[in-house]
Amino acid sequence: MTTVQRQRPGPHKKKALRGDRLSAALMLLGVAVALAWANIPGGSYDGTWELPLTLGAGDTAITFTLHAFVNEGLMTLFFFLVGLEVKHEFAVGELTDRSRALVPITAAAAGLILPALIFLLVNLGDGEPDAWGVVISTDTAFLLGALAIIGPRFSARLRTFLLTLAVVDDIGALLAIGLFYNDGLDIWPFVVAVVLIGLLAVVRFLPAPLRPPAYVLLGAALWVAVYLAGIHPTLAGVAVALLIPVFPPRRPEVERAAEQAQAFRESPNPRYAAAVSRSLRESFSINDRVQDAWRPYILYVVLPIFAVANAGVHITGATLADALASPVAWGILAGLIVGKSLGIFGATWLVCAVGRGQLAPGLSLHRIAGGAALSGIGFTISLFLVPIAISDPETQDIARVAVLAASVLAFFLGWAILAIGDRLSPPQAIGARLARPVDPTRDHVKGSMAAPYEIVEYGDFECPFCSRATGSVDAVREHFGADVRWVWRHLPLDHVHPHAQEAAQAAEAAAIQGQFLQMATKLFAHQGHLERDDLFRYAEMLGLDPDRFADDFASARVLRHIQDDRLDAEIMDLNSTPSFFVNGYRHVGPYDSATLIRALQSGARGAPAPR
Image 1 (cartoon, rainbow, N blue to C red):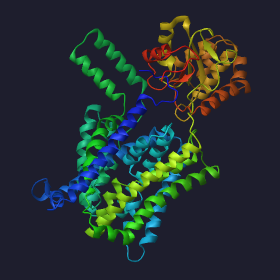
Image 2 (cartoon, one colour):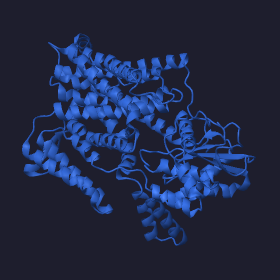
Image 3 (cartoon, one colour):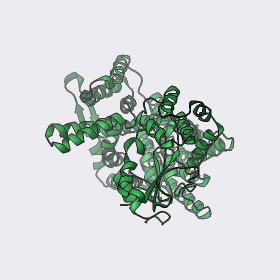
């Protein structure tokens, strides 16, 4: 499997696309089953979902219908997953970069408000104005599934934009459910819920083996307390998710896992095996582990079951005729199709036009317009809110018909906009090739310029997974010897690595005195000590001229060199370290030494990457 790619998605992107398509396909199958079942004579569909279920015993028992168990029980898991995504995006994901996140956040807000206003305008008078919540939310699973089915070229940036937008959209929808669609507050269960939330907040301080069962037990208790308080219990899932910590992989835990793996390799036994497994697991946050473990069950089981339970509409000529004359149906159609499209596209255009935000490289306005149209697919939360916001069963059926119709129309409208726009303005790959060739007079090169293989690394000295910190490129150079050269360029990630910029300045100042590699080795060996005093001490240890080092450290020459590397990275849309270019082409995927060796062997420098 090659990982050097020009215009093809990497393995993780292919997996995401396949997952999006499968989830959408299963939900569509659920809709088809529900519609067929609901229109079989005999009323078995309604009878099945009205079957009673009892949880608990005696006075503490709670009785549900099977339909309520799906919507208030199983869907708690869906909202839990949404909450995990929200927490992850704000902590370590797209929403950490506030300038880049501003455009989708503003677009999502407009995409929540404008549909609700349109629905209210259509339903003033004889309609159902309280049902405005039905049109505010985009279905994340169907949205990404629709994009995967349409399959526009180079869609990664559009997918990221829409996913970010959908996360903010989910936050708004969850707030709307909690604030406007509840049965009134019962104070004592609410107090218990607050206490449980406080207990959940301190679970992170428990010993690692106790945290998962503590989250499960306290989360289940919170669900019951929220339900008894009169608040929709699915919000308990969101609350638990937001209290679960998230962090990027940490170098010490990874190193500990490597040491234990080496011990297991030398002396295989169950105790070492358990230690390796535990260390590997704990190197990732609970948020990441739970998302990875639960996502398939929620996308491929819970959401299709939800579709079967909620999309069953008994369709007759009278139902369709009533829908055509109903302000509820027209409000839903106008809100989801017109409101979502105009709100998202208009807000994006306005924010960019006034200079308050900018689109990521390769993301054009016509693609935003197509994504905005697709955002009118409002399946899951829309159908979820129908029985909560509308009391009349016949009006509920009309609303469900309208939601399904709007979702279908939004899909084809988005497809048409993307297809026509891409034909008129074909998209181009961003950052597929190295923007500036290696220049031995200004770049930091280890190895011969005549070597047939080349690996260019954009990184920073505080990055715990950059190649010199992990030794991956050292292993590559040992494998190829004189046949490979390694090139270093700077990409200080200031928002996560606060000392990276000054560390880069120290390396450049040392380079002027001919000791870049020696200083780089020092910086990587002491990543936890990169204060300015530390940097000057390392210069002294290397025997550098201290006065010259101090002058060069803050010189225009050094700052310009680092800034040039930053600008190259920006042009190629690099936003993480390490980022590699192998034989002139962007490397996508794992960057361990074995993978990099295979990537280099796929072709000599300048040769086309394999398709």
